[in-house]
Amino acid sequence: MTRDKPSAPRIWVVVSDKAGDNAQVDAVVERLPWPVEYRRLQFKKPFRKGKPPFFASLYHVDKTRSDPLAPPWPDLVITIGRRPAMAAMWIRRKSGDRTRIVLFGRPKRRLLHFALVVVSAQFQVPDASNVISVALPLMRIDQDRLTRERAHWKAHFERLPHPVIAVLVGGATRPFVFDADSAAELIRLARTYSGTTGSLYVTTSRRTPVAAIAALQGHLAEHDRLYEWRAEATDNPYFGLLALADGFVVTGDSMSMITEVARLNRPLAIYPLHRSKLVTTARALLPSWISGIPTWFKYRLLPAVGITAFPRDLTQIHRQLIDAGFAVPAGAPLPSTHRQAIDEIDRVVAAIVRQASG
Image (tube, rainbow, N blue to C red; front, side, top):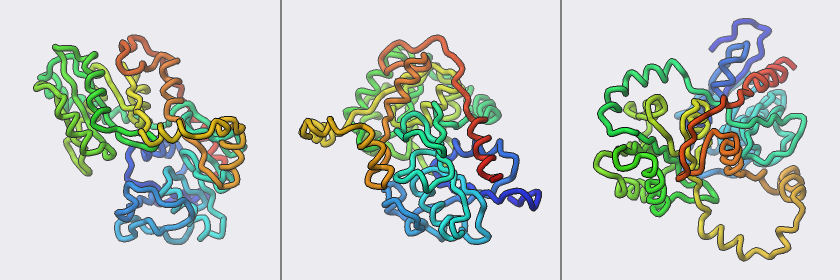
């Protein structure tokens, strides 16, 4: 996109193909007073799921399938995720450190690399002048799209036994696992909401393991449905479910799906993933003195100097939503009343405008 005025800052939005991440950035970008230029990146096969070491580089980028990154360099880069953030840091270096970076999500190391860091409650990032903490990720549902999807899927869902309970499945994310046993437990808990007369509509994601998908299929009844995620598919019922399902059970690893359901004020149950046996055993074997290391040292000092990463606690958002009445733990009765989720997007937009104008 070209800029309207010569005085407008040049802003690049550097993103990957992760829809949940991109939705947060898109929600903010559409409120900026200037046009932006998107740079969409694809990654080499080893790094499409695996996470490369974090430093300023393009070694993980598939340049033949990505938008070009070339001068003139932008005044500001807005990005999200480790892989795009590495490219953003490379851009800043190429610009002679002139380009400023706005990062959504936790930095893996030093905060000072970024002009602004926007973090939601699951990331344990300390207060700083360049950190904005928000309660929930900032993605929004396109209401026009929701209306279209409602019309498109209405007849399909009317043929299913009601209540229709959407089961939105993510996948393993360290240190949590989603295996065949987890899949069986998830379906059992979701069945408490559909009962014997309703149906489950299960959708998977790019991170759902093959063994877990097989287990999900094996525990479904004849009138249930399972949609397996496929890249570039045009028949994904996700938005239809958001518009028409009677209730939702969402695996606790997916902040994007949890947030979207909560922001729509739909009945939400969260299924927390279990820690891997390896992690559980290792924690049990750790010397007791480790737990006595001051929190500021483990979670503030070491990440600040680049030795460890800022920690993540997925359950923080779960607890926040449950305490506020937006959700329940899977298996508990679905909430019947809701309050409007806090909207902090204007505060974030204002902070980005100050960075771009500075």
